[in-house]
Image (cartoon, rainbow, N blue to C red):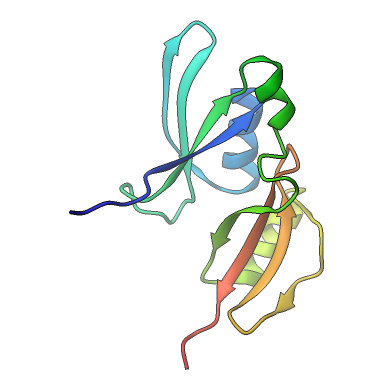
Length: 134
């Protein structure tokens, strides 16, 4: 049996503002934007260097008060998503120049160079460059 994680749904208030953040500020690629019904779309984005078969974010417009209350806090304030890079400092400086807010100073851990940033709704992400194996 072969399985892999395909998509992670991320609750958003508005498709277009979320799409602009992920493509313009983080440099993600738009994979698909398909209308489903009035007010609903299938919007997938992925990091620019990710393969077409890799995991993607499904930007899911929150529907109703309960989902709206979870936008920006799907994990109770814990880091939710992890964006790896081959050049931490390049991406860190580029993201800051685009207005991405980092909530801490970059640090070196045994496993990676890492810093936490917030998306446009406040979801926390790790930007990390894994440490090369010894």
